[in-house]
Image 1 (cartoon, helix red, strand yellow):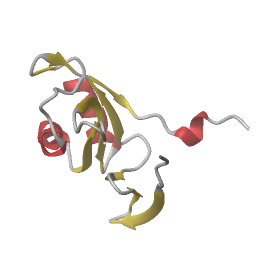
Image 2 (tube, one colour; image 1 turned 90 degrees about the horizontal axis):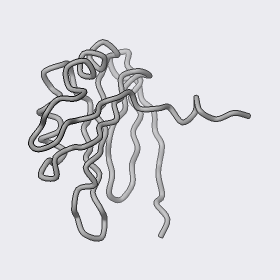
Image 3 (cartoon, rainbow, N blue to C red; image 1 turned 90 degrees about the vertical axis):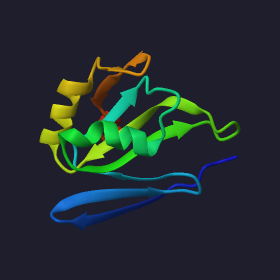
Image 4 (cartoon, one colour; image 1 turned 45 degrees about the vertical axis):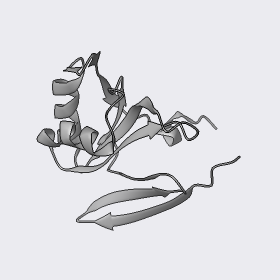
Amino acid sequence: MSLELVYLAVVVEHVEIILYLSKTILFFTGPPGANLFIYHIPQEFGDQELANAFQPFGRVLSAKVFVDKATGVSKCFGFVSYDSTAAAQTAISMMNGCQLGSKKLKVQLKRDNKQNKHY
């Protein structure tokens, strides 16, 4: 089964927001340097709990916890996107290594696939 992904970029309040749409996923990404990859998210966390945990550091555009399609069980990783790089850097400083539930989070900038391609 292949996942069809539709890409759409829009500008809102001078911030490019990238929308990724599929049958099961909807999330926004902020400007380069404002998108975080989060490892070791507690099993019981959903999108809203992840957003709530990262909201104190800036305006969260989206928060997504990935789940196994077959079982609906969390894969314990996800993404958080902010509207600014300053908010993302503050979140990394404050949340990387932070004990959340029974786990210590690993928080880092999301790698941009376009930057990693060598042509």
